[in-house]
Image (cartoon, rainbow, N blue to C red; front, side, top):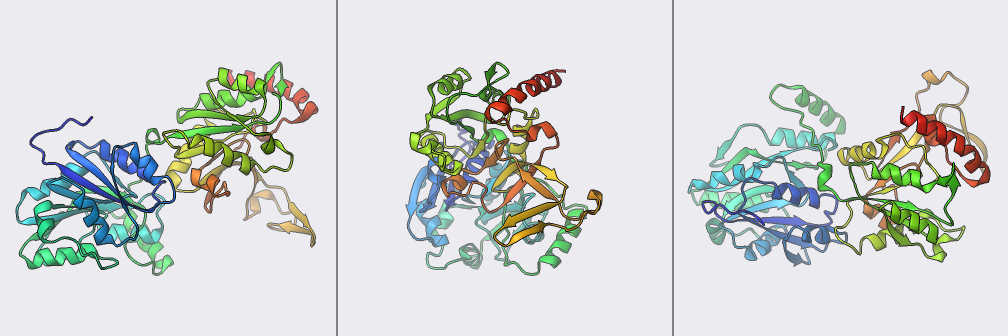
Length: 460
């Protein structure tokens, strides 16, 4: 429940969304941390096919559904369902930089001559150079009062309702509804303000991509210039609901006198970031071990334990069961029980990296410097650089996937049947033991001695 200061007019925050599952929890969490407390949130959603709406519902938003997107009409539709004296427009993939964003934005409207205010937009650390260039050049550090300049941007803006009553946004144009609105109110003798202290992180720029090399050069200069800080957005992991899934098939494997799966469950339980552990298994003994470790058991159907079944199908089934509950996951970590030698802090480090790097997934891997060949119907051929040159002179790097050791991915990737997504990152694991997988009777037998040594090393 928000504490309301009677001196603060009600602010209606209109958030436009279309498949913003990746960003929406961070966006709304940042809004809820604002020092300005008297606000309501209106979500105007354009037929999202992901879990944008479901995640937003946990924040008590008022939902307005639209079928066709026109930027001005979407805002007007949301405003018509709102009650605030002040109207704030925010894109669903914009994240307020700090807890003073809203106060700094709306304070400018105390002046009756000011009809609207727009705030700064800063790139994320993983925004492209083109987008960084756009945002850094467009949104500077000096506050401006604009009398003739009609540049205005509704990804992060505010206006007074009494002005909107006279000048609603154009409902026909397909873009620049914000600048057309600014031109109208300036023609009526009012002003707009640019307020750099009301800043949001915005992952893309505002212009068409031009020359990538030129953009890269400009960005490097701007980032090194005094007065233009290269601020890096750090996602607050505590805002995210992160779950871990451990797929298991058959009876528990016993190694060194105990169930092998316990080592994986212990590693997950030691993390700071994972909220819930799920074990997708088909055996009662494994289910009992999982429950005793505090995990939630998902009954794996026999049809998903056949030899030909891909692990992706198992993960899709598990995610379907998980997403029947609330809150919905923002990230899913996948770990297999056959990899017991995980370095301390591995999963937390991977989660931090995927949150900050803006990739679809991150997979543990080991570097392979030896010569590699690929054999297929066309014969045997080199992968990478041919010959036996010294490793330190090689220009290319090969990695061997350790998917079972740890993979962290966006839920949407699993739903779509491509666990890695289109943009993945590698988390290099240097410990040679971490790459060892224990399978079969021989593996379990030899693994016992290694687990003894691992345990002593970990506690030394």
